[in-house]
Image 1 (tube, rainbow, N blue to C red):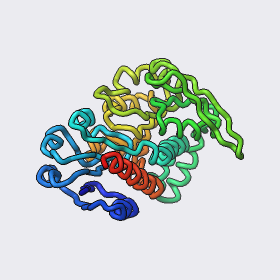
Image 2: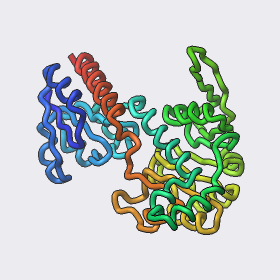
Image 3: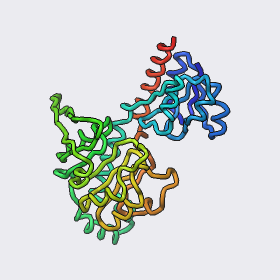
Image 4: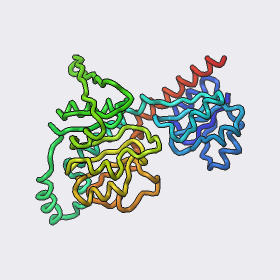
Length: 314
């Protein structure tokens, strides 16, 4: 079985596949090159950069699986692939911790104004002025965090927030209850998270963190920002399309939103300079899953799932 890897994979994953008898090629291809070469392969492993759309799928009669090293599948026409008998694989658990930690890093950084300090601390004068201005920062304890989406990443962030003594509420229309297991000194505790409507959550939250896929409709649009309490912080490590960036910027300028932590954007990598340069925005270049720990787990999970698929086909 021949496998094409287009967006990279940890070396342990590549060697693991080859050890189990797969022929593996690692190539960076533009869309036309991919269209020409993919028909020669039985499987493809991608991340977020490579798009596997219906036209490409139809052009590859030998394709048996499409594997996504990560959680989101919005760069793959999943239903069309499945209708063609092609297995679609992803690794939803592997990067959950890494993405949740980045979301928490943005929350902590914004709360203490780290993004302002990192940009502005230049000399003695700025040291003195920043020391004075940052005395107005707050803490996370007792603040209310709204999680939009209670999948694996949302649950990981909930654990961290509870550990910091935050009040956690969640909006997720696909679940009826959300119970979090907390392990503290070898003791396990179950904590039930209050589920609320989106409108109620937006009105109550001091922090809002998005952990939902993009379904063609923005989660936070112009109307959503009007429902928020003044001084809220917004965190997005899900999909850039989930937030109307123009409405976000307007809400920051009017003071409704005190700050935003963004790892994803409506148009990547062409990010609006207004987002990059704004002192109240903490910004990272879509690195939620980009830790050595997560990439190792992704590689291991992909190898295992592809091996299982091979055994099923045998």
